[in-house]
Image (cartoon, rainbow, N blue to C red; front, side, top):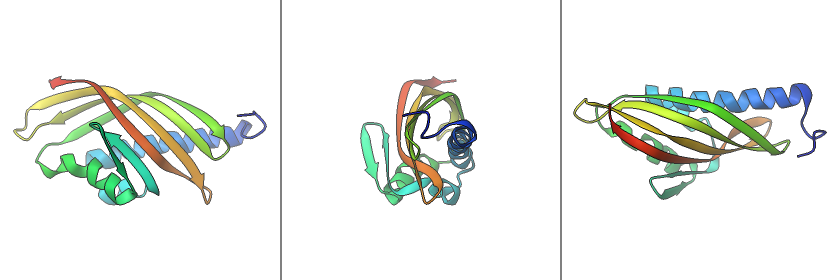
Length: 141
């Protein structure tokens, strides 16, 4: 991307909005708030997790909320986010993520991995267009 496409305050604002989306995803997931989670995605978004790709916001939300079917809880901690812009309305990011959760028996467990995300700004609003979840390690805490 040329620096004339997105720079200065516009670049800072776009970065801030994208980081906010990443944080809102974690909070919506941890609070089990499907409505808030839905608002973060474009209607044609995709979500890749566990080797499966889910396309369309309804499929994305069904896949992302599937772990909510049990009594367990979760706490997601995305960090070290790096954002790159391919244009003034398209960006990608990678974030390290650590998550602590309880399994169906209430036992603590942890997950370590990465989120690889794509975002698009449409009608002046940034949203997820894709998230790929890559869990590198998981175990009992």
